[in-house]
Image (tube, rainbow, N blue to C red):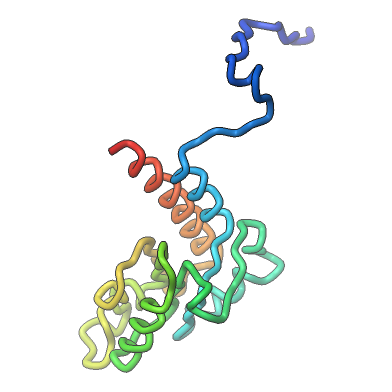
Length: 172
């Protein structure tokens, strides 16, 4: 027995499609968000063992490039900073400076338990209890250290957040 596909109910084409076929319309915020989410340029800020997992995410086995993510060594052209590892108090000012040098819009991913909440060094005299005490964080990737797949999932969540934020701006 073979399943056949019927033609079904075909809606009439709109007058706009008849006048301008192949033209894409959309709200500017949503169109820009689609471009932004598909071309993130992260400034990678590896501080400890999580940096090794972050680096392996950019290697051929996981291939972050297929998501449109290309590492960028300067904050002036980056729109995403990935903080991976233990943030000590000595690093507060450099992280804040790099974040301030990034152009808007900009996003932050905190990768690993140490960057998220201090990790095993919680309540240590020299460790910041999460990078969110210094700069605003958009996505938290838990784990000690998190696997490359977790960072990839965090990036996909960030892409969803970028799209959702654009849609929410258009509602109000």
